[in-house]
Length: 179
Image 1 (cartoon, rainbow, N blue to C red):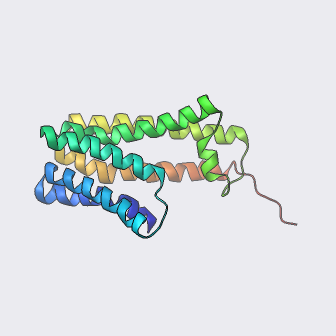
Image 2 (image 1 turned 90 degrees about the vertical axis):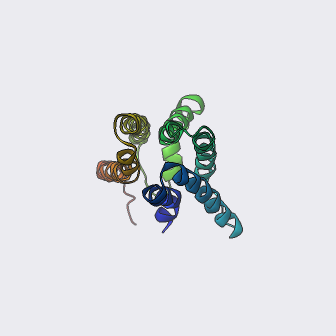
Image 3 (image 1 turned 60 degrees about the horizontal axis):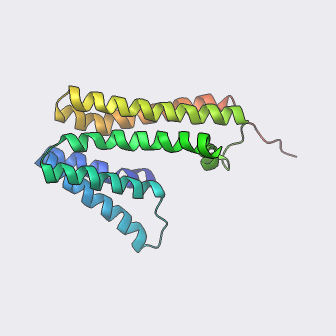
């Protein structure tokens, strides 16, 4: 259920685009992002930092799209978000010596430091690649193709990457011995 909740603005963006076009879809995505955070706050739940970052990026790039009536701004939004993720993961490791993937998953998985480092690097590479892939679709194909890619292609690539990571991790995780 959390997965669908996280995709709420993207799904509404897609539907609004198909019905009304890019500018209404952009306004809907901005509104949906505010509603998403408002819903969590109203229920007394914690708002994950990523939702705040995503809101800030959609407000800036979506707002520029609407203000200047230029769809190119919203096309950059996924790339900026992906590259932000990559920068956070890389900066965490290089500047603070902290593997953020390990910090997020250490309660679920036990693995050696080299495994965590490879996992962190693979996510950094994935996010950098996704940023470039988004730009490729955004500026080499029709707007309709980009919107379809944004929902189905990017989501499919993410699911495939997570599946491949799971397969790779299954060979490298440390199992606790039961006594």
